[in-house]
Length: 293
Image 1 (tube, one colour):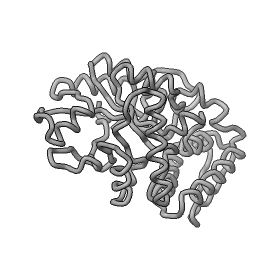
Image 2 (tube, rainbow, N blue to C red; image 1 turned 135 degrees about the vertical axis):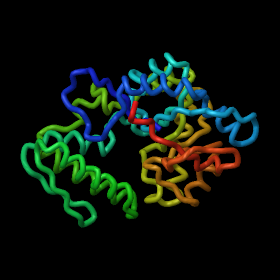
Image 3 (cartoon, rainbow, N blue to C red; image 1 turned 180 degrees about the vertical axis):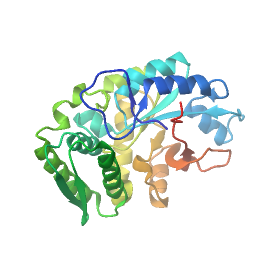
């Protein structure tokens, strides 16, 4: 499991508090993994796990969540260097709307605060001070986790998150949307990027339309997120969209049933572990790309 891939040697105006894999780490990691493992496609993995293909020991599937443009500009050349296929999971609404994720929006504003700022989410207060990166990272992680795990309706959650973002951006006097398209850490890939990736052997899968917290949505809304994202990917890439990745790793039996009903062959969680023959194909486990590389 990988998210963004950034160039650690590049001079940039800011760096997200959320840790991202560097190009050098990806390169070193793939070089070491290639000595012991086979890089295979998600198609091949699902065929093996489902019993339609012989099991090939020591196989690895590389997956990239969130559809960051740097997956194409920074990661794809390294993947090609090692002849390593991968799967990119796209939140299609963000590809269309050209706007940053809420957590990147908060991150950017927090790092540019002009003065101390307290915000409230679900009745809990979070206090931020300018230029205190380590403390801000801990507090921001706590806020982010609380947003992802609360069980209120999704619209209410996002309304409160938007209010928090507006407060922080007002304090900072700037917002990520102003630089988003040219920001190598947070820009979302375009449909041209997705087609380029698909043309180079990358599997394009769904990450919903809105990167939605699915267990905060009613059944009809979950189904819509699944169907519309699948249709958009198939329309824009000309390839079937057979695979799904649960945003934030949030899933339950109700959501899994809907993933099955809407035609996905397999789905990926953030639950830690490997997969073996006979495992449920709609709740496959993963491990994070090793940071030791």
